[in-house]
Amino acid sequence: MTGAELKSPEDLLKERFGRVEKAIELGEPDRVPLIIFTCGDILRKYAKGYELYFNYDRAREVSVRFATEYPVDVFLAALAAEGFIFALAFSDYPDIAPSVRFWTGPMHDALGDKYTRWPGRELPEDSIFQFIGGQFMEAKEYCKLSDDPITFLNEVILPRSCLNLEKPNSEKANVALIRLGVEVSRYLKFLGDSAADLAKVGVPSLPLTFAYAPLDFIGDFLRYPTGALLDVRRHPDDVKRACEALVEPILKVALSLKPAGAKYAFIPLHLNEYLSPKLYNEFYWPTLKKIIVALYEQGIKSLVFFEGWHDPHLETILELPRGWGIAYFEKTDVRKAKKILGGHTCIMGGVPPSLLLEATPDKIKGYIKDILSEVKPGGGFILSPGVADIPMPVPPENLRALIDAVEEYGRY
Amino acid sequence: MSLADLIDAFVNLDENRVLGIVEKLLREGTDPSEILEACRKATTIIGERFERGEYFLSELVFASEIFNSVMRVVLPELKRETKPLGTIVLGTVQGDIHDIGKNIFKAFAEAAGFKVIDLGVDVPPERFVDAVRTHNPDIVGMSGLLTISYESMKKTVNALKEAGLRDRVRVIVGGGRMDEHVKRYVGADEWADNAMLGIRKCKEMLGLGG
Image 1 (cartoon, rainbow over the protein chains, first blue to last red):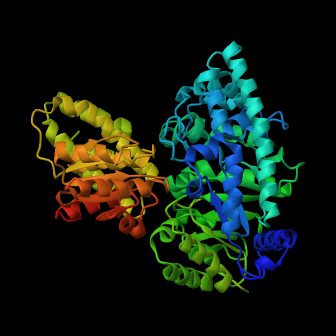
Image 2 (cartoon, rainbow over the protein chains, first blue to last red):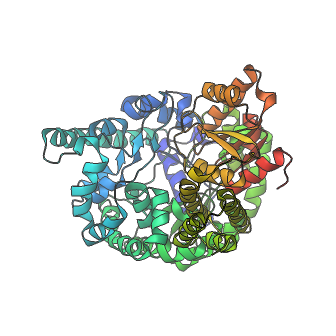
Image 3 (tube, rainbow over the protein chains, first blue to last red):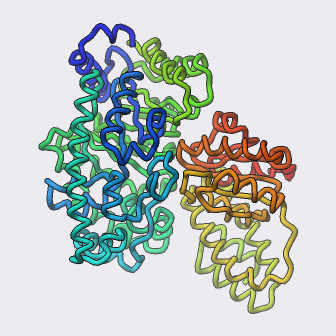
């Protein structure tokens, strides 16, 4: 970026993070911030998918290489899969719960979980990890979940969903948990080292904690997404009660990282796009709203990834307190979102990954110029590729065009 | 209880009523192909409601569940096969294992009258090529959720070209993250980011109207 090479990493860190914070506070920074997320796809430019999730040293090396070649205001490499069920199962232990929130390749090996698939294991070596979920709870078991979620997850669901935990108290199960613990400490060290590597090149990370929408938890970890959707029709009262019962443990997980300095809770949504406004407002939104508001009252803002097309539910966001956090949109047009939510919610997104893949650098720049001319005024906007990843074959000149365009057209 | 009642119950997603009516109609000797035709009409109306924004994906998921349940009862009773609108070879491309979208598309495509050859998930290019050789379909439908699927879709189209089969089929890519850019990158003929749009485009590609 212009002038970046003249500044020290410390100054760059401060400048970039300040820019992002200002936008989150609904203000106008010196220019529109650019955030890039990846689950590994774009990093396959430098390493095989398999290496990204099984070799922490390689993962560190390629993350910092990407951030050096393509410097942005925040770079987030989530090289681990969704493991929120473990965080929730251990939510009464704040020293453990957040550490098992994500699973890396070796943790998958330790647990034999049936939720995730990995390159070099169930998938081709150069793929990326995938969360697939499954059905591990019967519809008739909703009451057990609602009565005592923690006991039910530990005693019934984990043995069903993790091959190596299928016989609780067995040698195999105990070894699996010890292996998990060993991997967790290696992973935490990797996270700390990676953040330090990025800081050395002047690219900040976000101090994140994590939460979940209760109905998504049911869909992802217990009933499979389509199963949860069918339950909404067949067992509506059971579903509502279970969602309510999950709020408290989810909040415990999210707040467990507050003492360590977490400022933002990342909440990726899944079933939002599937639901009609009527079902969304009855089954999904009330408990999600409760979580976002409770975190806000504790000084934690949420970074909610509204997967897919969130248009029918946009106005419900206005029910949250002004400045509650960041709404990260995928297919919802950020121009439309800004019109409805501007001055109330910080909006993030705006760049379809397919555009980066297929368009020319000039077209990309033109697109960003147009979109920024509409969403930049008034602040409270962060530019970002609209799916939390960038496809590996995106040409380098297109990534540079993205970075140059925000520099050229994003200034206030 | 008539076929009109069946359509009404199906369109309103009244699962128990649909299955009750189907059972009764079969017991009374109604031609199973008429029952299928009624379900076809119902899913067309559901599709229209979806495209008008009155129904959402959860309604499509529920409707495909109901359709699959009806098929389980009706298919064994079916004495003659009706001529399909066309044949679709369908699969989630190599490296991607997500199939919720593919399965919704499949149920609605079958309900619409297509014959669907479902190759499953993580389907390598050569399996698409083999399936095109074996089944001689009108359409190849490639599904994918993740950004890595774009590459596999492109490889699959290239494999069809190398095998000299690309001109014999129409190719559509489907999934929540498909758009005009992906279509061009992959070298497909059409794209769809939801099942109903996919079925409309499949019909259009075969000159069958929307």
